[in-house]
Length: 502
Image 1 (tube, rainbow, N blue to C red):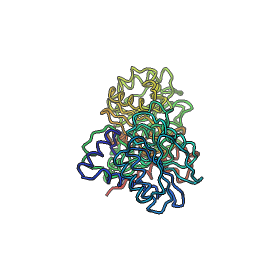
Image 2: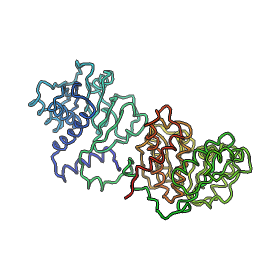
Image 3: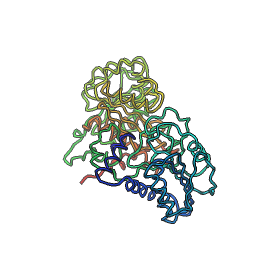
Image 4: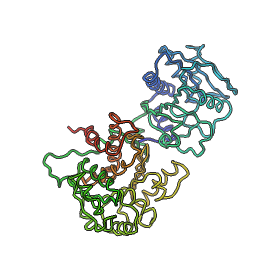
């Protein structure tokens, strides 16, 4: 799913109003109806509601929601926080409230007065929308601070008031801490950064019917991938096939004491559909790997302890390097030599990335469109530190373009930066996957898809989503605390099964 900056969304609103055509107040009503419907799904009618509305269109949304909830029998108190002027649509919805439910609404000007609400009240706030350009002050700042100290469940309309839609360089300013954010039509970029999580809470995207032509024709580098996006990428397996049809993957992994990395990556590659999987690792790991995963072909290095050389490396359909290989001088020399021999895109993970971080000149010899899978600390070692997640995203975009690489920056909403400048955020996965070995599983999955002739871009997108989906499926039988990497492998099959073919 393509999504947009807040300034672009305003243009989409404008286009919809002019070309649907629809009056802006009616588009606001449509948004309010979507918000109200979702609210009713989540909160019972016996819970009182306190609505805070600001002077702009976000406040107009809030007042329209308050009216719709009152019409459905909810007990609602509304507070309009006003300044010298209201937007036209906010003013119109204020008048509607005054006519239909005059006793439920009050207006505060310049000075905030603490409202008296019951312990089980839910707060809906629409103080400021995504167009806010400076920190909240005065009555608005006081209201935000009161909301945050109230201890009540909080629902923000479109964006938590005080939060910017893209970059937030100063998070010490007044910002609402929401439990739920009902985002209109698209997620906001800021929702996908970890430092904003305490403000956004759980975000839910609501379709408000912005014009499809405008959405299709407006260019954006931002994408948020969901199951339907990945369903278009997954290939059906021909009935008339053999193991050679689905490629031969080589995984260069392991060092003494790190056989598990080879096992996890190799088993994940097999579970992801590769016809043949070979692992090259130190001689000391051969018995462990082959007795654990007998389907793997194992090639022993001449060293018992680590990897020193791999012959005929470019004769495989896809190659992955890095899980558990360590950072010895001999392994560093092997990596440099091997990267110089490879022609096709490969997958680089874990210690391969750490070695490249120590020798950044190696970035220039990595085959174009290779897939790098750093976690945040590995990303810093490769490309340097960033002030915040927004800056780090821009750096990933820049490095992917400069070095013609695909960078998978792992996290809650894993970022995939591709050489064409596009930035794709992933929707699947959970915090239970923050455990040893899950990165090795992703490496095996990625090299498997490459071996099956998926393009590097599609392998990265599908691999990341399926990896997260398998992790989500684990939660049917495991808690986030108990989930381990092996569980993710065991759920790769069910994850693939969610993609059906006619």
